[in-house]
Length: 440
Ligand code: AMP
Image 1 (cartoon, rainbow, N blue to C red):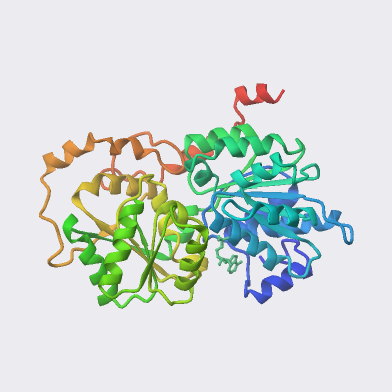
Image 2 (cartoon, rainbow, N blue to C red; image 1 turned 90 degrees about the vertical axis):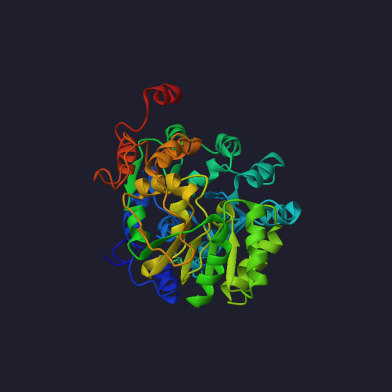
């Protein structure tokens, strides 16, 4: 299947050729015709699968049908969780619309609101925004939403994890009722399901083996390590394997700062991004990492989501994320667009339970490779059992729904329970009686 058989115009295809996109990715094959068909969509896909083009291309083409020369009416609103993703998605719209007379504007917090308002005043066909800043513009009456036909909630799970449900719901309440809604999520928590039930009408469910597309190309390894030796192992690995571009994930901001400092001290040029860094610092750190000026980028989960570094060689999980599903986001930073990738996890004994949750979620066990001098002493079975009762248990709700049992992948062979949850939102049953009532 080619882009032209999907019905995309020659102007759009020309822009894709310039980016060396030869064929549509699996998610694009599903999203493009469904968006053309006009149905609401709930798609299980993460960054790295080509999801952005999947929704951007058909939306651009549909907007062109109504376009009048020299006029710009806001037709599509794309809501994303972070500034980084906002910039990235906006850039994609710019690239794909290079040969179209359409305009897009990006909005996010931490930047001058007046200059954003001025850009909006000049007219735009597409807005890519974080929810909070979009709401501010709505409240300041800087934006006219009357002609909006498309709403995309990109990385809806992250939007909710970051606590933006109020802003998103508020923004949606200002949109025209008649519109097409596209919700993209990498994981399906109960809060994503609730949001889907609220806003989607008989959605088509699209799930393109969201783990598989990235994970197939990504080799995963766990190195068991004594907690005190983690930092040393991290620099040893980067140095001894001579990795040139490494993204290191760390759960906490302070820890990320510390890891960055230590790496620099050991001679590995690193920068750190997390929620407390200004958007300017984050952008510069990302740019110098992409250009190869810094060798290591240390990042916390939320800010790193959506970051697109096309040929990222290796991701290292310095620890296991708070939210099990974030592990999938982390691993998905490498092995993008069909390339090979490597994801290494440095695992201390106290993280074994959380890692098993991750493995259960991914439907596969990850190979353990011990490195001489770093491996912790073996943990007795009873001790492991005791840990099972810790609060880590709370995090075990899988990406695509709650698991029905708590067995580990090694105990039972039942594969990928995430699908169960996803299917339960099937088009015909997808809207609960309660929400049907609400709509009436
Ligand atoms: P996304 O999942 O939208 O963040 O895209 C991940 C990466 O894949 C980006 O670098 C895109 O430019 C690239 N990409 C998207 N679609 C294609 C395609 N059909 N062929 C090759 N690369 C693509």
